[in-house]
Length: 315
Image (cartoon, rainbow, N blue to C red; front, side, top):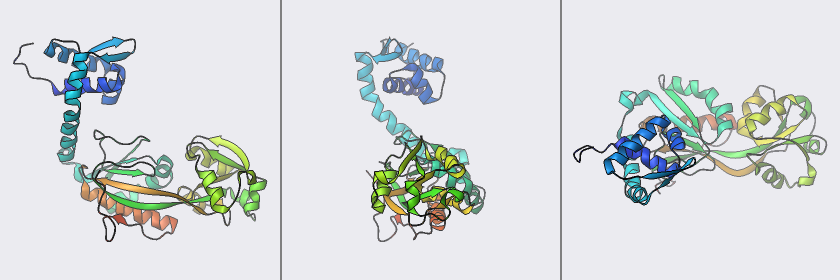
């Protein structure tokens, strides 16, 4: 390769991903390309420099001293380039009718958001909404317009809506709950959801109960697995009201009277400044706020930025 040859930005990006993942295979998965393509990008870059950038040790790829020096120099500027490009692009003219929503609230998306998206699409003239689910905090290289979360914080400029203050209720199948109050806890097992270990102790404290006041039932990883068990079995489930509101309306679940308690958790929507469709993202957050208010029967949530609250996140 001659000295006049252009440096491949794709090769640099592939190498930086290898450095982060410490694996060519994992880098390929992160970039969404084949392993052979990543290896080819690496070979191009090493030929350009005339020096080795990584050393393979089993399945891991470790940086050479030269590779570490280059990574330290280019990783942050590369993130800035990719961030700026994503912020400025308009998805080839399709941005006005396309929205990407990322969420860490998979059960909320499954039970409430997705079933109602048709309403939002119709209201906005046929908008397409993509839903992606991830539990990890988003990075500057992730592409989305809106983040829905309960436990993550968006550390970049964004407008924020607090659209639901989580309320916990104890529910069960109608024939399991009928005519019973909290005394049902002493004779009917309560299902556990291991992805939310905070729910049961928080709910017990809110009602002035103790762990010894309930019978432990089966364990499930997520609420969307526990919900069918609650609707079809002889078990109770302590859960956020909003994710079972539709099942209650359908008559598949009933709430034990007097079992409502606040969890102290807040569901938030962030409309990222870097999104391609800020106006559409804001419209979506307003629509979601109205939807949750209607379903939960709560007072309107306010956007952080609407008087008299603070303006926006910017960290």
